[in-house]
Image (cartoon, rainbow, N blue to C red):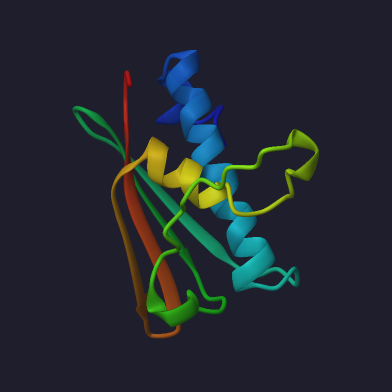
Length: 118
C-alpha cells in the first residue's frame, strides 16, 4: 500500500509514519473487529495541502462502548515485562490528528489525518 499514490510520493519519514499508523489500524481490525476470521476493509487516502486524509471502514464488531481506546502509554519498570498490546492506540493517537470513530449501519468508520513533516 505504501508504494501506491498518494503514499508513494511521500518522503521516507512521512511514508514510515503512514505505514506504522495503517499497520496498527489494520492489525486492530483483523484481531479485534473481525476476531481473526477476516472480512472486508475499505481504505480511502486523499492528498491534502498539509497531509493525507484517511478513512478506514470495516464491517466487524464495533469498538467497546462505542468509543476509541484512550491509548495511554503504559510504563514498565522492567523491559522484560513488555507485553504485546496496548501500544497501538498510543501510536495511532500520537501520529495522527482529527481522529474520529463512527459506528453506523453495522460499519465502523475511522477517519484521521497524517500530518506531513512532523
